[in-house]
Length: 230
Image 1 (cartoon, rainbow, N blue to C red):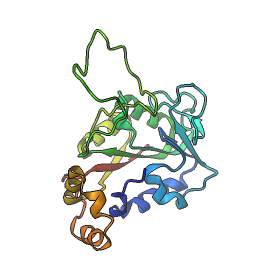
Image 2 (cartoon, helix red, strand yellow; image 1 turned 120 degrees about the vertical axis):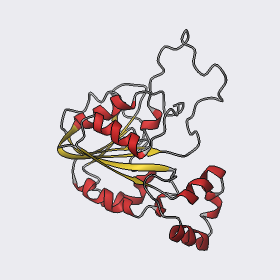
Image 3 (cartoon, rainbow, N blue to C red; image 1 turned 90 degrees about the horizontal axis):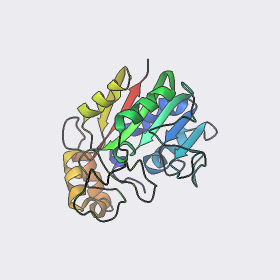
Image 4 (cartoon, one colour; image 1 turned 180 degrees about the horizontal axis):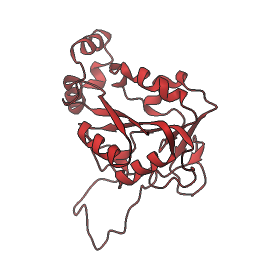
């Protein structure tokens, strides 16, 4: 599903332009080639050097629509330093161990490579677990749920700009730049469930784009980070 807030984030294309040129590009943890936000910038990529990796319950078997099987916790099928760039779009909130996943993204990048990570901040739960009930955790029954299937994954985390810096810096990246994807008004309209309707009205879309500027450190639905490996 396309994220309707990304057209309000004009820097996205310029952020992805040098990333798309840093081939090969591995899209880790996706549901298919050029899924989600990447649909807006597909034309930037050479499709022969872009590879989509999705989680599969059958190790080594690529899920439909993907080029290889990929658990971002453990991407052993990708060699150290094999990637010019890695993408991880709306994935880290669904994994149980984001620091481990961040270290894997760092490992597969070659020196001078870039990682682009998109994550939510102020947004509703969007996992695919059954309806919740208490206890949400029971030590006696908990045996490690892993990443789960694409049809039944959980939703565990939210990330501030500072949290992203600590997460990716702790994984070894030398520099992390972060951008909010939308402004405080669009963020609140999304939480109220009104943004999807209002964004279909062209004059309102134009007005929101003019008035509601994304600002780092303010309310936003999510963040995009670019992390650099020295």
